[in-house]
Amino acid sequence: MTSSAGDAEDAVLAQRAAQGDERAFAQLMRRHKGPLHAFARRNVGDPETALEVVQESFVAAWRALGRYDAARPFGAWMRTIVLNKCRDRGRRLLVRRMILGERSIDAPGAPDYADPEPGPEATTVRAGEIARLEAAIARLPGQLKEPLILTYLEGYSQQEAADLLNLSVKTVETRAYRARKRLADWLERP
Image 1 (cartoon, rainbow, N blue to C red):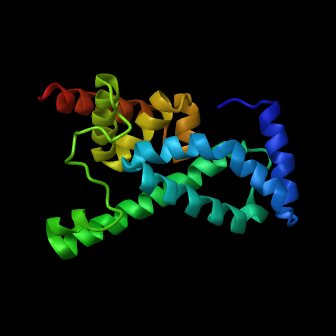
Image 2: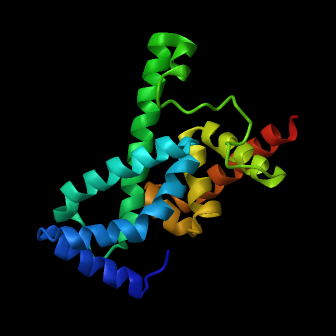
């Protein structure tokens, strides 16, 4: 996303936090936890797992504050950390599946992609459609899911997404297109 006064405030808070100011870091957490949770939820498909990912990400960020580059928006830096934590979880789930077979899907904390039903808070048809879409997005392979989430759901430009993912703009464009096509195919099925 583009630079703003909020980014400048975040940089100051991050600098203070790097010097040990826990209140400054708490303020950064309050500012970014909602958008980061939504970002993680879109990646993992489960709100509780997403909360764990965000918590792990803030712990990692606290430890890495000395390496934070204030010229870069704090939110983008945090999204990179969250994305890496989502990838780590995905790899762990893949290893579990390889070792335990499909039984690992029932393991505690593993997202349930097969259940298209909306959660208990989703009482309208629209909420059910959103839950179905989020489950479908979570099923996408990471290389397709990440560009889609960043460009279409998080509002990043293709250039910004390419920078975050260390890809070319054309690769981001192609992968986001393929992700949308795959989602459309899945969602057309009853």
